[in-house]
Image (cartoon, rainbow, N blue to C red):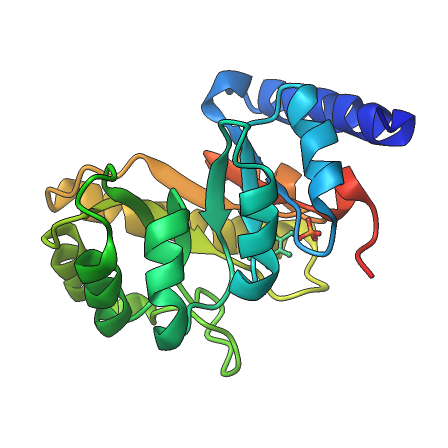
Length: 228
Ligand SMILES: *Cc1c(COP(=O)(O)O)cnc(C)c1O
């Protein structure tokens, strides 16, 4: 297999372990989702042979042929892109997780379109934590109503929250924002929702996300190199 990929995977694993140890967390609590968008199915196959099982894709059209080529491997596929109404069926039929749910209408479509033979689709609600006008995600003030409504939909299993920070922030600000997402999840749990997932942290900010309690990090560049 690709020696460079193997080296990057090892380096990332030890960096994730070190980040967990530095804040007294068990590395087993943090799931690595390898973001393979922009990289071919062969790269996923190589990564999977080293033991990675969870992969993330952002574009349905790019993902479907890749999933088909890798159907012989038992991989867990996470849809992490912006969800469009005309793509919900493909996501509901082919993925195991969706991280970017931010509207009830989209969740209702996923619920109706999830095949009956499949286990519930794991869902994270995306929160627009920095209030960026152009970014997807529900505003924190609207989160509670959306979370309860999604929780009640058949065919879906609400797992937790997802967030993406603006680029270019320093560590204190990143930790504060990731911490706000964690606090929102804690409040929903106190309100009775059984959430177990905080999907936050990418190649540039996963260490700060882990400090703030991330249970899923979504990492592309640090694993597969620069996307074309
Ligand atoms: C592309 C992408 C990632 C991975 O980003 P890297 O910086 O390459 O690690 C993670 N999450 C989402 C939502 C993405 O779109």
